[in-house]
Image 1 (cartoon, rainbow, N blue to C red):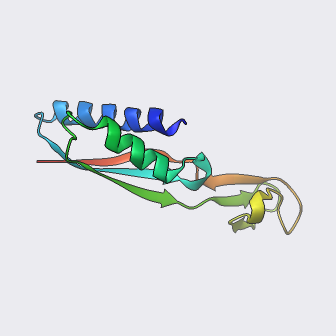
Image 2: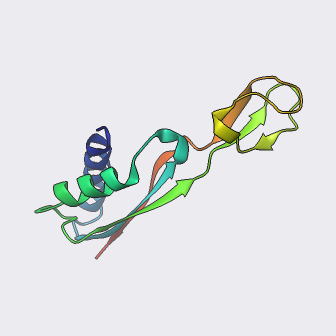
Image 3: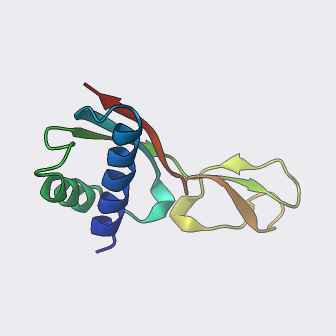
Length: 113
């Protein structure tokens, strides 16, 4: 369950950000998370709720924006599509596809009191 480690990393970064900006309580944390990261959202939410108690983020909401998986073709360059069933071959020329979005894990903002 790597979601607990991810939740801890997000919380640590948010608290560090809060401390660098006056130490106010954290109201909201927004995370951009690619769907190809393999993170189970329910497990991430559960972990975050469990570890935030007694911290600056005790009442904080974790908002997660899911970034869709998108690919492009390295051969013909014409394919920019979401692969079906994780088939990473170009439907036009058969070359391998490159992931251009969907692996993100980015703390977008921390909203403080």
